[in-house]
Image (cartoon, rainbow over all chains, first blue to last red):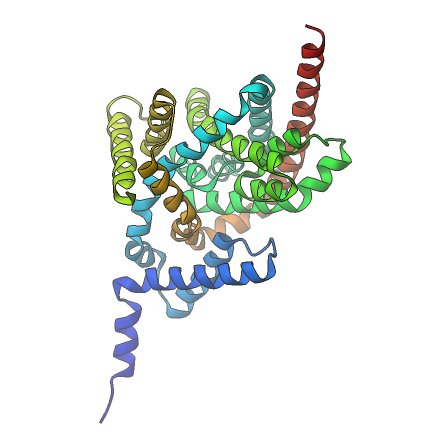
Length: 238
Length: 120
């Protein structure tokens, strides 16, 4: 009896569920490793991405085939972005007292975070597509990806820049803030959430409840502000 | 419960997409949906149980949903390599500068507000 091993492997690799299968598998594997070690470099998205890319390269699959088979996950990304309104609303209710300091820091901090990055990237000689992808790097990934695509960048690259920003912020942020004399939990949370989004917020939550609340608020405010004003600003300049 | 909340989210996203096509082509549909939902919540003054359940379930799996688009980076490996140092420099330096800026500014503003409240 001669079994058709080659054909069977081919059938599995090119099955529409294969992409979803490896994505689910890689994600759970990385999540389990992260739970065990709590190592900040094991960011689920970043590591799952590397695992999936290695599997795709090993099997000789193209990105477009993988993308097509994971379409269903992509479709859910829209409602998930809309759902970000719920935590934003809950956080907004908490800060009535410190409204003006928060609002002012959001405006100036947000402009500095985006402006300095664009200026440095341009000065270091990055091309236009890369610059437009770097611009939304301080906001949470679904928003950054939508915005990058909108202003002429690349969604996939934006996701990676966002993650790198978050990880660097989480590693160096708390020590840097202490060294610069920023000790109030509200200010530390605001700085971490504004510049290092979800990863910064998780670090802020470890510091204190109050610090975490401000980080979550800063993250969602910065996300919405960037989503609304960055495309506007770019369309005015261009 | 979960399905009812999910239906709301999908409805808001579709409404956002319609508005995006009709008037606001610079804002992506899901972002308009987010703003609409936020306005709705502010007007209503509370988050209903179905919506809150659907939102927290979906947001818990947000990292998983982000994996497929992030894998797209394999197509752009050459572009990253070409601008590697510019990207790394811009990301790291701008992060450190803006983090310190935001932290110091917020702390100063809080202190100022506290002083104002002491001497009204």
